[in-house]
Image (tube, rainbow, N blue to C red):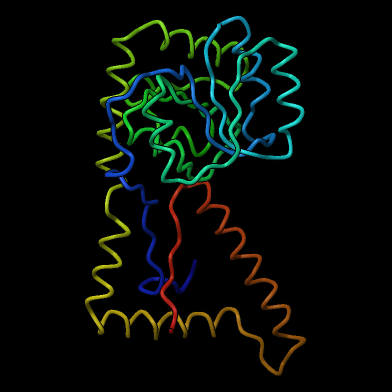
Length: 254
């Protein structure tokens, strides 16, 4: 966005890699999904891919498609353990009980559940879709598949059948999470908290930026048009930010 240099800092999403880490546990879950039960997540294709495989699958989340998904799983004879939303601090227990994690979405922004699974050292399967392909390198730190049933099924069966593949992907997934998503927010907060000069500088420039781009004045008719244009511009950049994967953080007066 024009005029934002020095006023807004872009930092990657944060995952607590001390909380989300590999732990010794009985692997009593074959496949784990965490997320909203919505069309974006492509869960009907996942259920169809699981038909006949005999894998214990846990799906954690709620959403508009929950009733239909439960009914479809019964029709297909797929064994699913459904869990509603649970506290983030409880997720490592489920991750460490799982042999694989899957995210077959049509698109994502910056999927934190996927990064948390990687941090916990799970072999991860992700659709070759925006927001996922930026994180997973196929056969290096995860497995990329298409969004169709056949490709999802192939990914699950290939990884399920090979302990060597699971070990390879697990090790690299953990290393990727550690190298890309540890401590960036913590470091930013620490640095800003420690320096009154930085806080003053960012506060002043953030306020000036907000006034120049998003405030209404007495010239309402002219500025309403400008304001609408500015918000449209912001929305376009928000979508870019969403699909490019970072989080946008601004320090404002306070």
